[in-house]
Image (cartoon, rainbow, N blue to C red):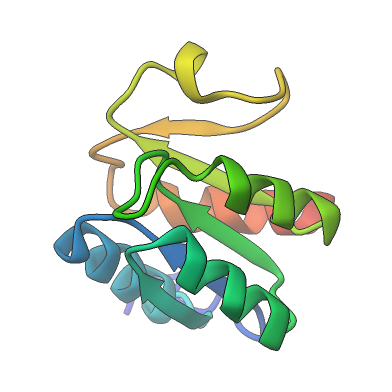
Length: 124
């Protein structure tokens, strides 16, 4: 393990992506950094159900999901004041609902995902 291995210890991070391999990679990176991963899920509806059932500290979500875009999930996260990062292959200008919203382009370099989640959580 490297020096940042536990930077997310004690945080619950929701992971949602329509590509289960990408979702699992994100989940593994977050787990390695000490986060408790909620999911991963491939649909917004699943993630919204989890958001209702569990207190989430932060979220990593794709823009396009199996059941539709993540717009409804983003709204639910905003209502609960949960910071989130959109990780997508689409241009940020197309997926950003708010100019302050962090959007990362796929593929995210190893290590960057966890440091960005930590920074988003600390701003909460």
